[in-house]
Length: 238
Image 1 (cartoon, rainbow, N blue to C red):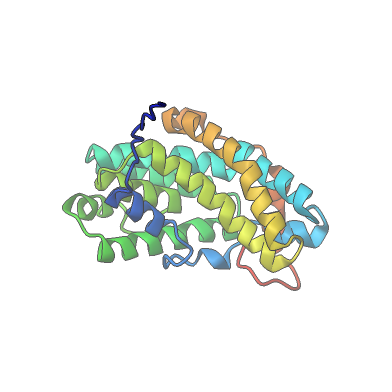
Image 2 (spheres, rainbow, N blue to C red; image 1 turned 60 degrees about the horizontal axis):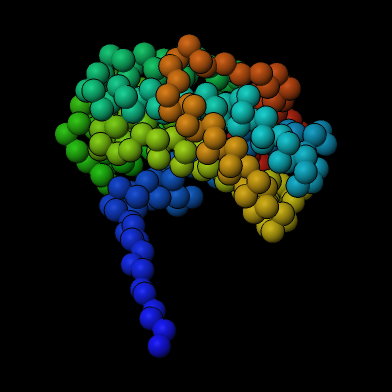
């Protein structure tokens, strides 16, 4: 007679924190992310991005050497400041984040989304700590700083926030690529799947990094974002 032993497997149920983070990074959250391509429209126009392979390469550089990496570091630093209730430190992180934008359009991209995110979150997910931290950001607010501040004020996990932000950054630009038509939906999902492990690896380092680790090496993208300002035909704001 055989004996069958049942092994119980612990299943982690989603928490309100998980669902809140999913909502904040959803395409439906009213930050206007759909209007920006972070220079991708110019890259498609010039032929730098023309298929799934070149899109993956372009986004990979952006993740590991460009704004995505910087943004993850900035989000982590804003989270630390908000969790500690340090409005002055949060304001300094925000000033630096805005100063790092290499063009007018990329400054608009981060500041408009950040302001919209902060206002929407104060209305939908209010808490005393977030209200206090928002006082340190009365004007332009960089998007990763606003997101990190909200998560820190709500006591959310910093490492999970940083990783989720990095993947959302990639997903938004793949969505832009689908509208610009160099890749189809299946190929776009393949690009996201290929970059997810790189985002996860970078998130661990970014979550522990300090502000001295900030820096980028994407000069063609930076120049492209400037040239996009006068591009003859365009559908995105950056």
